[in-house]
Amino acid sequence: DTAVSQTPKYLVTQMGNDKSIKCEQNLGHDTMYWYKQDSKKFLKIMFSYNNKELIINETVPNRFSPKSPDKAHLNLHINSLELGDSAVYFCASSLGTAQAQPQHFGDGTRLSIL
Amino acid sequence: SQQGEEDPQALSIQEGENATMNCSYKTSINNLQWYRQNSGRGLVHLILIRSNEREKHSGRLRVTLDTSKKSSSLLITASRAADTASYFCATADRGSTLGRLYFGRGTQLTVWP
Image 1 (cartoon, rainbow over the protein chains, first blue to last red):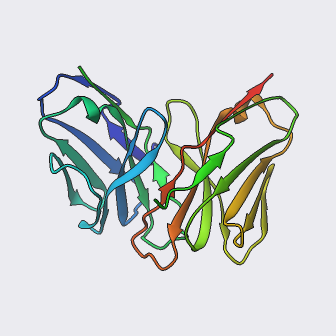
Image 2: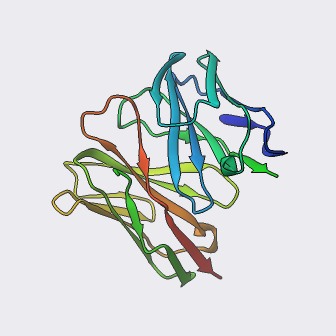
Image 3: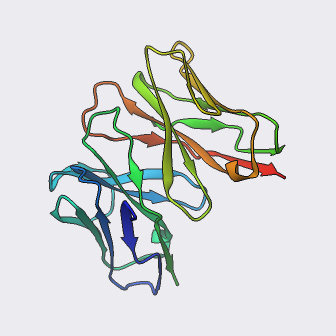
């Protein structure tokens, strides 16, 4: 069974469109994250939720809006997509926010903006 | 920025050889983690070393940490083709309770059969 699953795996769309990425974890973790990995493999955190509460909100355009309907799910909605949004978006989860907790990653959503 | 820096950016070796990757970071930390990313997949946690530890082993992995130099190294012994992947170090600011990790750009390791 996949521990952290994201859908879709690939997303190809045109500039200006609105799209959503979904993430689910079956590990019973309290904390979930969204990361963006650019073409040079630089991985940067975007958002984090702990028990459905937003705890990390990095400097991200407000076109990006996360939503956590429950502890096991974290979605990412992106409005008015731009060329620079092309990247791989990873969802991750951890047992809690303690520093020693390893993070478990999904396999990513590859977003390509035409 | 607080991100770590892995060195080298790319490493190419033959099966059976050892691979050493280095990580430097900028802030005081409580621990440092290493992750592996296979092509087209998510990151997988390999090992965590605490700031009061100097060396840690897990199977063919050996991690060292030098907090005075703010650096860590990951050694993979007797490498295999299946070890081909990108390797990232990740740190968190000491005292941070939010789970925020800072990753570098990784070292791309290629192991030739």
